[in-house]
Image (cartoon, rainbow, N blue to C red; front, side):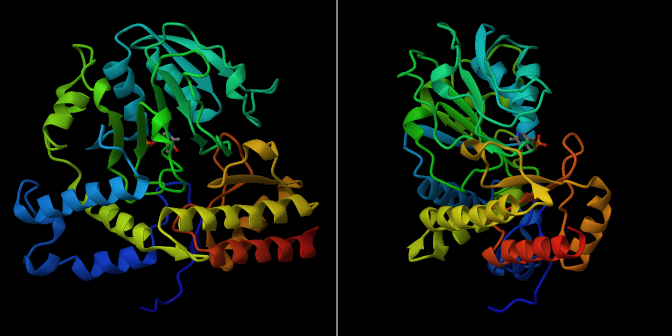
Length: 373
Ligand SMILES: *Cc1c(COP(=O)(O)O)cnc(C)c1O
C-alpha cells in the first residue's frame, strides 16, 4: 500500500502510530469485518471483541516472549495510576526499594510513600539535580526486606535507558523487580527471568492513550492491601481476564493492530522484535552521531546511559530555539520541543518512527547549523 507523505511526529506521547495501522483503523472504522459495527460500539463481552482481545494478548505474548507463568492485564489509569496501584498490590505496607534515575522514577517513589516506606536504593541526580547518568546496579544499596524494587527502565523526560536489567538475586535481594517500561516497551526484548512485574502506558509505543499494560508474575497476584480498589486489584483483574470492568476496548483493538504490525515488521534481514530493535539502534546512532559532531547542539547524557527512544538536546544559543522549532515545522518535523522541566528539544523516536524520519531530522539539523552556527 502506498501512503501520502505525512509529517514526521517526534512527540513523546501520545506519540506516532504506524501509518499502516492508522489506515487499517480508518478502513475498519464503520464496519469491523462485516459485523456492521465499529469496534467502539461493540459489547466487550461479545464474540467479536473477545476475538480482538484474545488476539491482542496472544500476539503480545508471542512478540515479547512472555512466559506462561505471567499474566497479561489490560488496565486503565496509566503509568501514574500504576505508581499507586503497584504499592497497593505489592508493598504489603512494608519497605519498598526505589532506584531514582530521572523524573518518572522520582514521581513513582513520591506516590509509593502514601502506601509504603520507600527506601532510596540509588539516586543518580548530580549536584544540580539533573539526571545525566545511571548508577550501575552493583552500587545500589538494596534493603534486605524490600517487598519489591522499582526501576524505570527508560526515563522519557531525561533521556536515559537501562541497557540491561539488573539481576537482583545476584545482588543479594530476593525482592521482585518492578519495571516501568512505558516508553520503550516492545522496542527491544525483555529478560523476563529478572522481572516480577512490568507496566506501561500504551500511548508511547503501543497505541492510543487509555490502555495500561501490566505483565505480572502469577505468584505476585495475591498480595493486595485491603484498601486497593477492586478494579485495580491484579488478582481480581486477572481472574476476570481484564474484564472486571469495561476495558478500554478501542485502545486494545489499536494496540492489537500495532502488535500484528510489529510481528510482521522486517528490517535488515530480520523480522519482528529483532528487526524493530535493530532499526531503533540504527535510528538512535544516526541522531546521536549528528548531535555529537555538531558545535551548535548537544546531548548531555553519558554515552552508556543514553536512551534509544527519547533524545533530549539543547541548542547552545537558546535564542535560536524558536526559529529552530518554526523551521522544523516548515520541514514537516513536528513536536520537537523539550519537556518544560528540562527545556531545549527532545526527539522521541519510538517504534513507529521510520529511519527516513530521523534522516530528515538530521538533514534539518545540519542545514540549520550551517545557517546559524
Ligand atoms: C508517560 C510516562 C508515564 C505516565 O503515564 P500516564 O499515562 O500519563 O500516567 C509514566 N512513566 C513513564 C516512564 C512514562 O514515560
